[in-house]
Image (tube, rainbow, N blue to C red; front, side, top):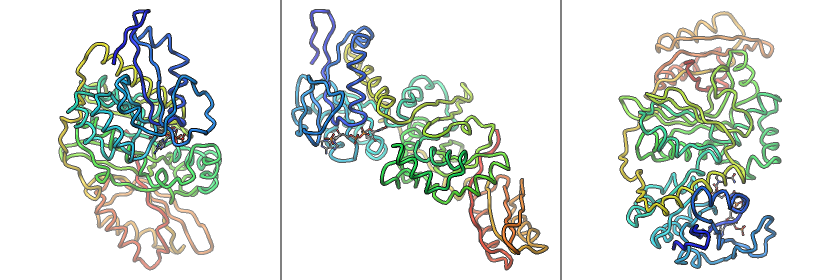
Length: 437
Ligand SMILES: NC(=O)c1ccc[n+]([C@@H]2O[C@H](COP(=O)([O-])OP(=O)(O)OC[C@H]3O[C@@H](n4cnc5c(N)ncnc54)[C@H](OP(=O)(O)O)[C@@H]3O)[C@@H](O)[C@H]2O)c1
């Protein structure tokens, strides 16, 4: 309900679902910038209630005017609350609470990537049915503006590709392995100690977190319904310092990339460790920082860079969404979720995609080994771009190869044949390589 106060400003009441890292940041920004936000929007923002699990928890920065509640209903059904902000995380009960909020005529702001990636389509439909909207800038890239630029600023473009470092945990680990030559376990422990990795980091390490974010971004960029299951995912846990050192020697750094591309055949969607040429802008994105590199048919190459997580950076995106919702409320703009217009485009299986590959293998140190490997690759039309050979242990050589682009299916068939060559001890690792532009 919009109430106009004595200063001529209206008051917009906000209910928070969650008052943890991001919720507290949201409260801090609204309190610190209250007058500024009122000048920008013509409205004073008031957080009136916040849902929590524990009423007795110590909460630094708690605004005493905010009523804490263990029961969501006083927020979801309060006629004085205009905007409900989901910063509680998880699929349920957050999904049900957002549905109820929309049904009750409230606009919704959410930072919840899991929910938007898996159930966004259903929630957009509920929003449309009730003539409300869902704002979700904070769900991908924390403080980096990504959703609104793709949805609005770049809307004139046909977007050809998006390529991102959109998981801070894995980027921190890979950066430490590269710069300090820490092994994977040490780099992970350090990321956990610094708060960049959760105690159970499997969603980040396995690439699922990046896949959720890619599903959201690719849906918007290519105006499609992207399911998380459509995205091929590979973990970083097999990347070793040895791979990183060979990559450096060949002119690359290793990053976990989330990649979406559209061509005549459909969408190519994948998350995997990648050798990125050192001169590529994404190669200089270090530690917990995130970036999205995008190519549009009119704008050309564009990169967004910044902090992909953290209390205030993420809350910066949450509050920006709240302000957009306030402006739409004040100007009585019927701001439908355009996402409901999208239809699913075909997805090209990774096996039919073309990629370049880095291969590290161990073989007996004897004449003719390399020749037999090159012959198998040649027969499968896999041509080689770079080769390194070192002696590792007595009588054992390590061979590192980088291929030109090849259909993935052909490459893996050739690799199966190489494994069967007598002198080959093992294939130590295979990592995709980003084409130099
Ligand atoms: N942290 C980041 O840097 C970041 C970045 C981007 C996006 N996000 C997203 O933002 C959301 C919030 O993350 P966060 O890091 O702020 O989480 P958090 O620190 O764990 O805070 C969660 C808050 O929600 C409350 N809560 C959780 N489940 C609840 C339930 N069932 N009933 C009532 N209250 C409940 C908790 O209450 P108590 O305080 O009483 O425990 C807490 O206040 C998530 O969707 C996350 O993916 C976070």
